[in-house]
Image 1 (spheres, one colour):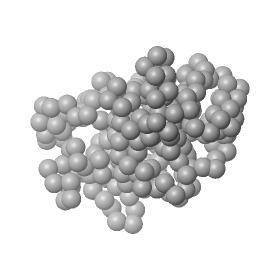
Image 2 (cartoon, rainbow, N blue to C red):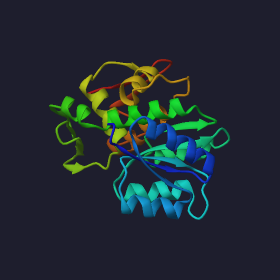
Image 3 (cartoon, rainbow, N blue to C red):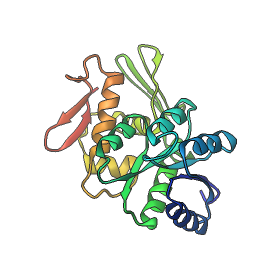
Length: 229
C-alpha cells in the first residue's frame, strides 16, 4: 500500500499542501489538482489508486468529476465535504463514492480513511472471496467480484459488491449499521450511518423486483439489515 498513488483534488492550496505532506510522509505517491478539469487530466494521464475529491470545485464541479471518473471505471474516491453539503454528499455516495470526510478534518483521519478504502479494495479482500453464492435469480461470484441477476451482470461499485458479499455470505444474519461500517468500510464511525443507508438503497434498486418492498435485502427496524435467501 505504501506505493499507492493518491490524487488530491481541492481548490484550496493549503488543503492540497497539508494533505500532500502527510500522505507523502506515509509513503504514498501524490498528485494534486486545483479544479475539475485538472483532475480529469490527471486521472487520464496517470491513473491514481484513490482520489480525495472536494465537491466544491471550479470549472467542473466535484459531482460531475465523480460521474466522469465512474464512467472510466476508476478509481476509489473519498469525498471531501463541508458540513452544509449533506445533500451533495448523499448524491456522491449514490454515484459510487467509497467514503467521505467532513471539513474541517484531521489529516490523520484522512490517512486512516485512505488506508481503509485501499485495503478493502485490495488483493487481501479479493483473496477472501472464494465461492459463488446463488439465490434464485441472483448469483454472487466471489473470485470475479461480480454479481449477476437473471444471467445479466450487475454494474456494482466496489463498496456495493463488498456489502452484498458480506450480507449474502452470512444470509439470515442481521448486521447493525455499525457492524456493516466496520466490516465493509473498515472504520469505526462517529454515528453517521448515511453511507450504509445509501448503499443498501442502491443495491435494492439493482437486485430487487420491488425495491420499496424488498424480498432479499430486508431492514430490521431499530437494528440494521439482513439478507434473506
